[in-house]
Length: 218
Image (cartoon, rainbow, N blue to C red; front, side, top):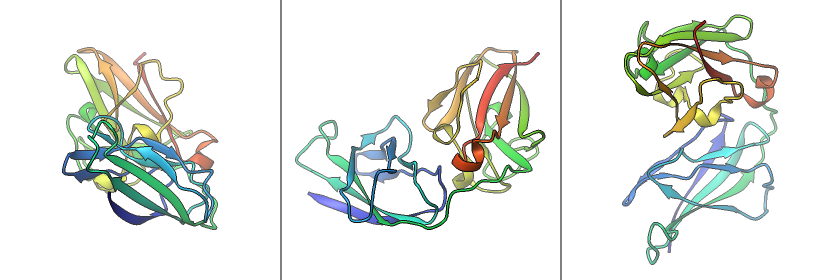
């Protein structure tokens, strides 16, 4: 066996990561680390290749915590049989409670804006004003099929600042939303007008997860 080991400082409660291997891009879904204590046992997860969301450490109890992540590689096994395994250990526990402020504006980019853009753009990554703890974006589908998008909570955040499916709540959406490789996605019908809403309920202060819903325009 061989291993890659590194430390991760958690200053983004809902961040995610992935990396390339000789067998392709590594993903592993989410791992609840709320039960970890310093000096305790590792949590382990079989790593996936290809489909699914990026790796993420969820329910991290404090901002500023450091976790040690190890990818164990067993060359004697096939990928399907568990060649890659991820181990996570809590190295140091942070001291700062999570607290999130509702932003004055949010940004959206993806298929629904006509294309993906790394930085702010009036069309491809427009700024949406948050009023009464919510922002909306109206979108007319130009074709049938999947429409993916992500949001950002601050301007010019680059690709690293995008918020995808694993970092939002979709409760209450009338148009089903699905995880498309980390993107928030829904199936659209050509010439139909949809309203995308990004809301910041009271729960956002503690969990940092906006509520994203898609409905038909009235």
